[in-house]
Length: 276
Image 1 (cartoon, rainbow, N blue to C red):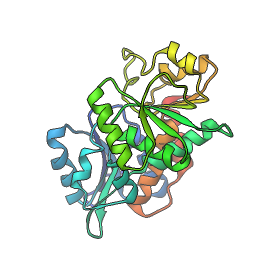
Image 2: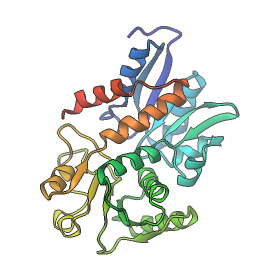
Image 3: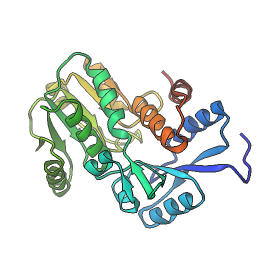
């Protein structure tokens, strides 16, 4: 890949972000189509989020946004898509016709991956672990794909769980604070699992008792997370976030270039990095 003065800068911003496979995936797509652009990861803390995002946009670029900035970045958006407005979170930002445009491509990606894992099995109740932007996307994905389903929220912070429930009510989502009720789908929307030292987002004993039809861990690591491996050992259909990464990245690519993304190229880049 040649970097020229004309090369367009695209970036993913987050904290942490060094683990992100978005640069590898997006640069593979850029190379396949012969586009004059480069995609990089920019470590960005809360204090520098606005500076970094506006700087990339001012240079003619665009950004993806990951943990923990998906909610905060919405304040920088002038033209938010309906799904970004509903979630109150944004994961892709670019220069729009009326200023800064923003969208949330996580919702469709999570819904598609959850549907693939569930197959023909029903979804009456989903347990979403976490309360951030990814958790909101997961809740909206459930509400849009299975309108009669209830979303249970599980958080270590009671106040944040309460804020999530207040948001969900305003967004038209049937949501409750997690109890001991069984769930058909469990979604880990926290960063737990990025490090091998992390605790499991949900205790194995509780997972085995619930025995959901499917587990979707939005975290991805080589060899898959311990949470995914534990679920599979319990006979539960489980997958990490690689499929969600590809689908949301392909949708972001369309926002960046107004072109059809080479999905198979992107998927191959991710699978090559993570292994089967």
